[in-house]
Length: 465
Image (cartoon, rainbow, N blue to C red):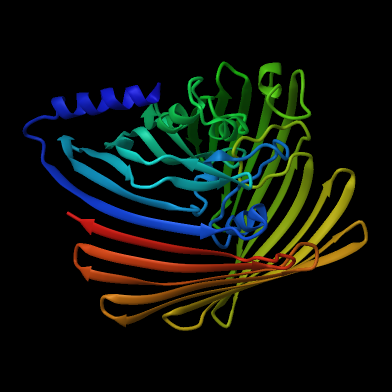
């Protein structure tokens, strides 16, 4: 449905653009070749790619072992892909103080595209030139609106935290209130090719249906108002015809220049139609998420204290790593030691009737203008069992010449509870001319217990006009 709206949008915008509108046209032609190998344990290598220090994806969520997060599966390195993307951007002013940005991206897939999802291969046949996405952004003094393709919509960490949608996102002032409305669903072009009844590719159809939200619409409405030193906000998020509903009250309070706080309570309810798609759920469910945050500046130190409780039946939708049924109290202190940013943390939580503790320390060190090092260590305790994780991350960018840069990214994780892994990526960025770039990357992944490691080769050529 949204695809048809996008096409109507393109036609209306093209033929109604005022002749006097100051307009700039620019674009890119991107040629991309991607080939990744996932070793002998595809899901294990995919999970390493998803690590927050590498691609930061949430592949396998809380819907059960056979459920996946489709949005992030698309962002995994491709087993094989060779394509060209043609992006055209038109920008300018429609009227006084009203700016627009109109973007159209078409795509040409030269070979069969092979990708991973749920630890399996999922091929897509070659496709001639086709519309991949289109969007229109309008910005004025009192409103901002996005129509068409929204790359990464963020509502909250429990509902649509960085979700790609086809729809709209409007923010504006309304009767002295901060008003936001958004609504949309999945990319219809992809769904049309793999989910319709006449499609013969049952593997592709099945991988989409393993995400319980693949054909649902997500809608949100928020209203906020600042009263003295307090900001009050009400939110209403729902899926389809109230199959899932989040009703939210949030407060932000500035107690003093150095002390501020936030409080939020969310009532979550789901009906039988929603729960019938989620494993081990049935009937109607409802639960609460309650949390409070305090931020304090003490000299050079920044202190954050948070208490959070998420009910067992609270249904998360494309969340940012939250866990239903968990209560948690955490304390974090950021303090520079000899100009080196240092973070200390302490967390005590309760999950499934058992208490757990964690204490950690992290440092970020700019070794020189080319090299950044980051290290973290965490000691965890649960049921009188201790385990730990040490993580070392290094990034290196070195200009050999003004137009040629070498770069590398290394992640080494040592974990006593889970399998340790090593990730290394190196490449170069060559600016051929002011309007032509060439990028090349090689990546390598190894993990304890794997007989075959993973690797990737990636080439991207960009021409700007």
